[in-house]
Image (tube, rainbow, N blue to C red; front, side):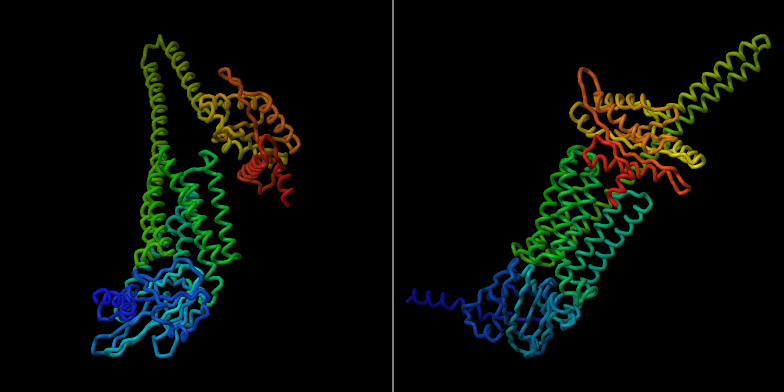
Length: 620
């Protein structure tokens, strides 16, 4: 008998579970209907409400968790919940669907036979309530019990993220959420304008890339939270669906550019640049997929891209931190906050963790933490720049003080001579003249040293800035051609990496000596910086400039640097720009076009000479 009762009880448990209703009591807190819900999967998506209501109770399965989440599945899901008003007076409640990216949602039992139909693949005007999320209002009479049935189908995350609250509680909740969203987007806007202003003033691209990243991330959040469909494109349903993976890839693109710039990958091992360019290309590919490929493919592509960027960011930041790069520590903390928050959002979307207000707004929280950390990092960057400027000023003042001391000594010596005996006037005068000559020579040597590069002995970039304007003005007056060669030692970083910086310095001195032997008296040879050199040729047309450039290239290629028993082969990439200047020709034009030709020479394989005009004509 006892065994029979147990078997009967087990058979009745599913029925008892199905009969459980959710009591709606007046409260300011929201209820999560998930544990009281049951669902029926509809793989073909062809069932209607009449056939669903005729299903046996055994066909329904309990949700058994705080939210109804089925991951990324295109099939339709029917969910039902029975609600009950135990009070003695009617109540107004709201069923809030917190996932604004559901494609289609149908609700039955809210208002008689009236069917609620909404979703981000239906015009916004169909919604009963003008709201970024799906708001389903209903009323229950005193003691009434009602069955609510919801059908959802989407190409994205099939996560209902439902909550129940009274109409009054919903109004308070909405006011609070709008306040938080206003503060969030206001903080992003302020940060974007702040960094954009710094970029306009300093022309530092770090601030430009970060401003664009903040702007694109704001755009992504505006779409994800439903504001875009409500306010920007309520009827552009196809664009709204593709805009989500598109905006995600766009924010990722600018995040990669900012990372590449702030961590100075350009001057590190080439693998950093190669991976960064690959991720940039992948971002552009995902953006193209969002505009042309199926939505699911573009969405999966955006998730894979985020995962690859997260892995690369963790590894690269850790390596730069280990190398002693000052910004890497704060950068790692900032990105980690956003990556962890994004991971919570993705796990919630696939249904691995329960959906909640925390997971819904996890990326916003992570972004705010990242904003604070990156603001500190950029502030530290500005402080370091100010410290460097102040140090340069202190050094300049020290030199000026030294010159004044020398002048004071000279004046003191002159006074001693004037106050001395008349018999020693000539001797003292001779000594003074000798001291003045030595001082003049020292000043001239000091001035000359300030114009030369300490390592190679060539003129430095300061001389180029001073002399180029004069030479260009002279060429304009005489209407004679002027030419510029922009030269770069190929793969020079590999020389430093393989042999050390002392050998690299010897190679720079060797290259400078070989170049100097080819220069005329009125040619200007300058070490532009690092392994880059610039030659300004007066009264020289394009054929003459190309001839000299080829001579320099061949000379370096055929004369290795011999140092400490090593023979190190070197090569030059040279960009050439020559013209007869007119009134509009500027110093910046000469530098820019010669540099573009140099870049083309390096891109074409290095160890060659490229003429800017030929390069432009070829492109046109």
